[in-house]
Length: 101
Image: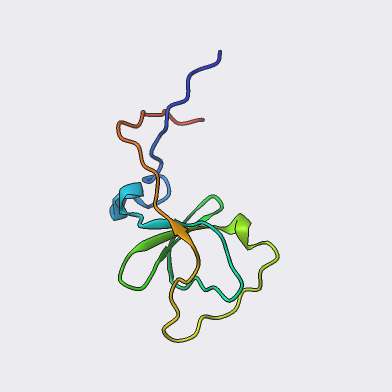
């Protein structure tokens, strides 16, 4: 039986609930660009997404599927985020979901 879509917050399952879930995320990397940098400390991984604490204490999400074909190098001292970032899209009133198994 087909059921209607209902967004569910899985932040607890991935250890992200202590950070406040999606509302605590400051942005999502929109695209990678030549000469751009994304530097931060890994705080969580959920599926293909890496959650990085960046300079200033914010949290940024990087979808690792965008990394295909890009060279990964160590960030220099003081490197920050110099790629386009978009705000996180959040909705209120997410549904509850039972476990799958």
